[in-house]
Length: 369
Image: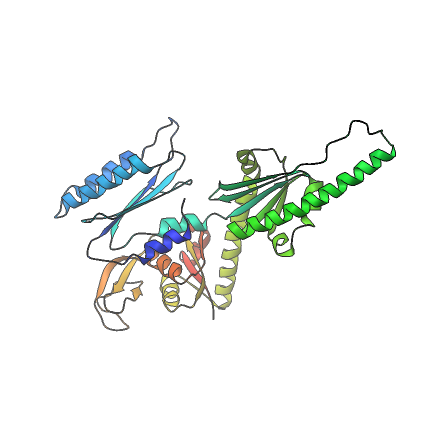
């Protein structure tokens, strides 16, 4: 599993003379129940380690990656990112339940864009299943159940001598109603603790329509406001069954968030109000810490330059920096640079379909001022 803390740790790793090999692998099984990543990895090993002055060091780096895959990879996951220093011993591997495109990059620092794209493409949900006597809470991250908690109660036993329609039956019904209120109060405290501990973006409340409606009234206002969806589901349904029921909602939320970000960006760009589009303008505003939200096409590629003196990134090839006159390094991955700057500044990222921002040249930013 990966988190924003992993990205921040990789960002804090300083650049040094020894390059870093970043390897991303799609670990899904195909229709024949086989993983094909080894073919790609073999081809990349031949390409990177086939010649050159660092041939043996590159071969050793790929060997460390293959060793990590053999020892550490868990078959339930669908993607991995492995980083290792060429000419050194440092290695870090991350694995996650969603696929990633096969890719290798040799650079001065670990590449983080594929990880950021994964994290920003999934919400963190808290799924709550409740009935009158049971409560189940599941933290759903990257589409998978991560933490599960269950609360069971000890309800009043049903007496065998209750007469239908008699006074004892009415009395028993009152006791059961009071019992449910007591349980719901306890459940509400448990949900509040769950929300505080795991901090999901959105809560999803499931159960019978009656139980969901009644239980909502017991939740504290701040927790109740985080309930973004309610659904009908039996409390004894498995986690896989619940996630299958909720999959359409999860997909709709991602599409909705993407559409809102694009519409807002396009509207502001059209009205020339606190927004920029295109690599040159967005890159400048981002480096000046003026971007509030960065909207960028998935898997887009863009090369530019970086000043070796002041560190400013340029969306063009230039032998000298227009700001300080320093020499520039060419062929710099601008997408990786923009994502790294955004992560360092804690700027929200919105990765969207390339077709939806083609008229904005693939990237844009909502500005703070």
